[in-house]
Amino acid sequence: MVATPVIDRLQPTSLEISPDIANQEINQNKPTFVTPDQYRVLSETAEERLEYRNGEIFVMSGGTANHSAIACNLIIYLGFLLRDTDLRIYNGDMRIWIPEFQCGTYADALVINGEPEFNATRNDEILNPLLIVEVLSPSTEGYDRGEKFRKYRSIPSLREYLLISQSEPYIEHYFKLDSNAENSNIWQLQISDRLEQKITLPNLNIEIPLSEIYRRIIGIS
Image (cartoon, rainbow, N blue to C red; front, side, top):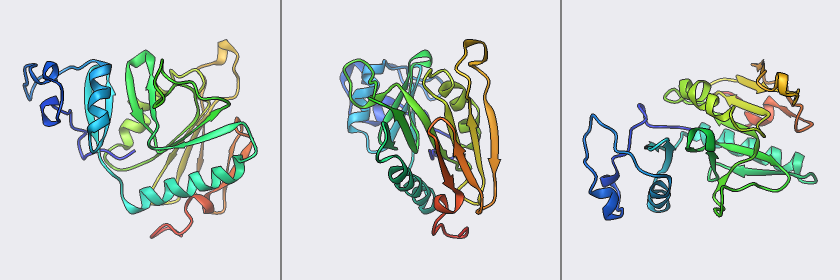
């Protein structure tokens, strides 16, 4: 997911919001905290995607042509492979809610197994991703590998995590196989960096050629 060069904290008065938020003290050096419900109100009318991190809101900006094309390639190919299974695919519009960190965020694609588990009565916040995919950009690469992945790992259903470069054939595939409680936090890493390679997603029982992910990507294929 692409963000502004330095992911900006959103000061709530920059959007049309309810008076109880707007009347809070605004200080550029001190974040203005909002509740999850206030965040959801802001998200419904905001032009950009907004990420919620334990009381703070961050603006997520749009992506490059390669970023968008790679995400589309992957979703199209996954749709073909998974069309007759119980696995469901969602694009970057579906918000992932991470209860342990009180975080609402977006990935470039995600897959769930079976029926979606939504956050309480909402139908726009998913709780049970099996696979999460992030297309990397210079401004968010560190966040996607670090803090964001740490939060993702707290999701019990998550078994596969893909980090995809948009500038070269390079994919980091994090996965875990053993659901035994003793090994539940052990993640393995496989790196693919050639177009003739395939990525095996063991928990989805599929393979994805890098040539499909990078099909017609400017400067790569």
